[in-house]
Image 1 (cartoon, rainbow, N blue to C red):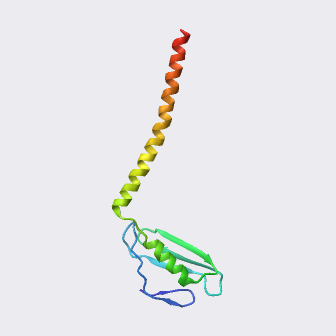
Image 2 (spheres, rainbow, N blue to C red; image 1 turned 45 degrees about the vertical axis):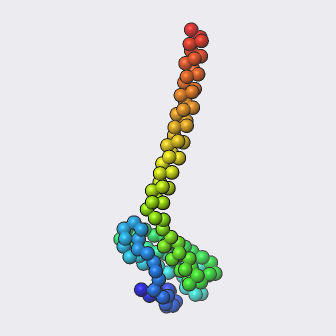
Image 3 (cartoon, rainbow, N blue to C red; image 1 turned 120 degrees about the vertical axis):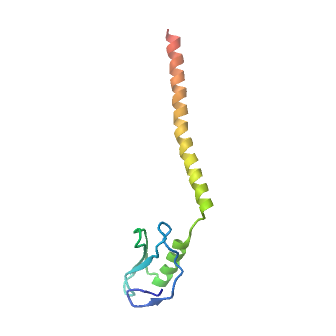
Length: 118
């Protein structure tokens, strides 16, 4: 596919990966032109509406496009993703258990104090 920016400059076929959520082919949307200092590129999936947008000042569309493609195509493999999710789950679980343990210690101390008062 050839991408054309707002100044009708053509960019070679890129190697954009499909959408990581639905697998649909994505589109590029250019905002700004050569005369504007602010330029944006948005990668948009028409299948599930996932979007990624970057805006720069002074840099060229070509520079921004290379950065966007590199970021979009950066994917982790399934094994690494599962490992990250497992670590996040364990972190959340331990952070929830810790206050419960502290609360149990406080309750035990209060029970001891009540026993002493009898």
